[in-house]
Length: 387
Image (cartoon, rainbow, N blue to C red; front, side):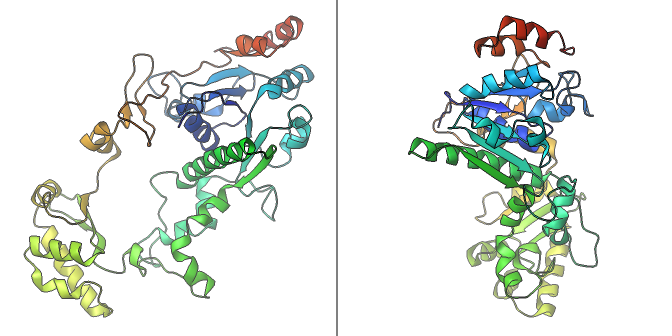
């Protein structure tokens, strides 16, 4: 599960694209960030600023990458980029549709320099469709794809902004999946390809659980489906210390174990009742029961019970949890702030890069290795911004 020989030119910025290429870097790929002179990736200076002096978003998704500053609107910068493309396996861009063509770095142009190239275009609405030119961010895409509508207790409540930027992260993950799939196809004899990935398409693919009803002409409603709180066996309950427990006892054996452990065996036969009045009564009983003790007390009490119950933890608590540390999901280093680990491994030992690149730090070394002439290199580096 290594990508040590993979060479990626990353023209993306902010979060979704850099997350995708961070996943590739974590597996050993050489990822070169192509940043404009001056400001570079906007995430470098985006609040809040982390321990490294860079924005926290930049800190999280740019470990182990190299940074090259090139003005792609300038002939010299573009020619230098073409030389890098000749040796690249992947070019990743997140420009709005049409921008890559105007810069002269679109797929059709770059295949003149490298026919085997895997070229990735990640955008909000894709390269085609009525919304292709529309601006947007994670929240807009979540709204269009039904995620926000379903992220609330009922349809009388205001939709809630998801705590994590779900569309951004899912799209980065799907882009990385698309890249390794395209590379595998290339290894099996296919040529290079252009991956057109729309973030709205990615999030629609996450709506599988509701698609059957929607295709049948129904409209799934929040709080009225099995996984959005219709049944009291799958819900969130307040505890005595104003914390919360997650109860997800969908299977009869887990529900039976829970009801027995909390001394309410009379609820066992009402597990997935189709009677709204019965469900309401069961929910009230659970509410009254769980509010009698703290979240920690309940977690201790139910620790040895074979049922699906957990706590609602803060992000800090999640990183401090022994589960995260045992799984290597918190990585400390001497040269950068802690980072999140890679969530898949083949053995007990795994490592991920931790160092963050300064703006343009690797411009000379990367371009020199690519064969860029000394004259061109001098012109390009003379226009660089500060690190």
